[in-house]
Image (tube, rainbow over all chains, first blue to last red; front, side):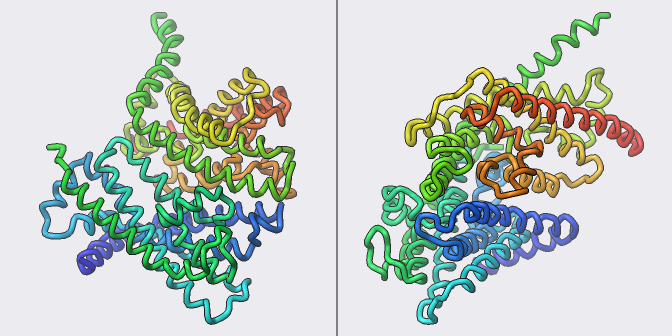
Length: 262
Length: 265
């Protein structure tokens, strides 16, 4: 499966490299779009020293961690949200009769390497945030763990969004509310939101495990909801649980799929 | 002149076709409204946290800041704040634009009419839900000057069209519309007031951003709604940018006509 994915992704990368100027522009575009978020954070902190109890470097750390995870998940699996286009165009039928996993084919189809620009921008913000914080060595190891867990959580969200499109072929944008909405939600400390939302993001849709709970652990700060400090260590488990749900939903979607007959 | 009467009714009819065309895709419009609403809720919480730290920031109270958020989310559809909404770039790439240019009607006015129809439909279907949910969840304030607000929204759509038409027509020279699209989206989302009210941008950035055309697409209509801007100068500002951008677009249309001839169609 990984070999098939790598082969398809490499093919699309070579195709993108045929138009170097366009490729460079789109990569730069990703950097600039991500830079906009930073500009917004900068404007907010030009007006206040603290947002919901968190300072600029802490917000940069939380932002960088979730956006790096999202950008990498978007690079690797983001095209799953194009599934409704494949359903409408009938190209999903072609994928189903090929001897390779349809999920891998949909995820790797039109693989867009320029999305790496967004990852570089997010990684830079994460590094800048960490450099400004005094994180003890005993807790820094959690940073890569939370980024990888975040990638799995967002990849699972993309897959759930894709599975949803088997039902909502005419309205694929609904899935964006969960994928891009999840990325936006985790840009800021969750203490910004109503506690009911934070509870939902902790116990139902585990977005709190992307950067909030593990981030509190890294920062050595108490949880406003009163959860114990080791809650953040549960990120990998939460990510795997959501991935399992997403896998089931995807299989259910493929199973109930009926060709448009075109 | 048999053509004269037809020309008078042509543009309203195009606007009606634009309206009906978008009305066909009601599910997509409602999905867009759903997404705009979700993001509105997320943005509202960030702004509430900011206004709790700095009450009265930028001349808005918390209710004003919340209303601002949901209004600008409601503008995403009609003002097409993420760009696009026109068929023009695709028609330029395929060469179909040659046909559009020989029609005995102005290409710009043709596109504007269709776009006004599109905006009218999306104003209701994509603008209503975020405003309604915002009112139910957080409570938004009532319009300060409803009539001036509607005029301001209409002018905002014309400014937005004037800008998007220029971006679309630039495809004639650049040939790759995606890079331009990203550039336009960045400028529009940041400088329209969609991400944060321009009133809280610090120093010269605040002054500059409020003078640029993008502020006419979201910041100014929202200020007219809230009563934080005098309607007369606000509408004048929008009308000025609408005239400038439409004139620039008309000049580019003339240049594009020659350009297409040089390419041999």
